[in-house]
Length: 255
Image (cartoon, rainbow, N blue to C red):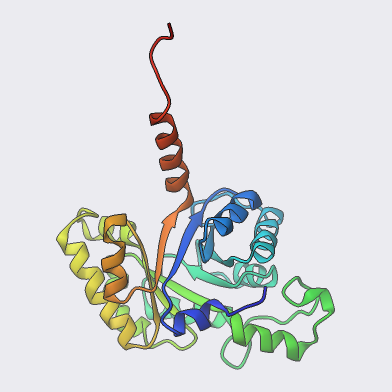
């Protein structure tokens, strides 16, 4: 797709809004684009995507003008290879607990010399052999985006070392899992303070900062902390829309 990449937009300190999608539906991808979202995160951690489903959702994203990333449930060379070969704009690795995992995710996301990603010119990302090796590498170096999720007490304790790993574009705070790992309520002041401290460290390291917005009333304040990717879930949006529609319709008995 044309226009600026996710990396370019976030490096210019633009605030982007994204939505996690757990259903393998190209139609919902198109609806997110039509609703004005900047990014769809196809959720392999909690969703049920087959390879064909994923590619169709990526194709829908490209044609409707919304950026795409895939949330990977585990750090795997084979999985990362497939996601990027299918044409995903980037990868968001879930549950990154330490610098070794971060280093591995970075390696699998990039071609040598930075990483160990395998080269093929026969994939969707390489225009089915219409691009040569040099063009494939140039496109990947310009656009492939890697985000790592910090969402555990262990990851929180290792964040300084994780921030030192090259090839990582964004640190994403998984507020729901982090609150569970820390044994605190997601609406607590302690989580709020933790989010603020993390934003400062992430931005000081020169990386983009993303977060799951657990309370929409706090979205503006999170942006003020320095988070420039704010995400919600598509299912929350569908639920709230359906409930609002239902509440406006009559109930009880007719005359």
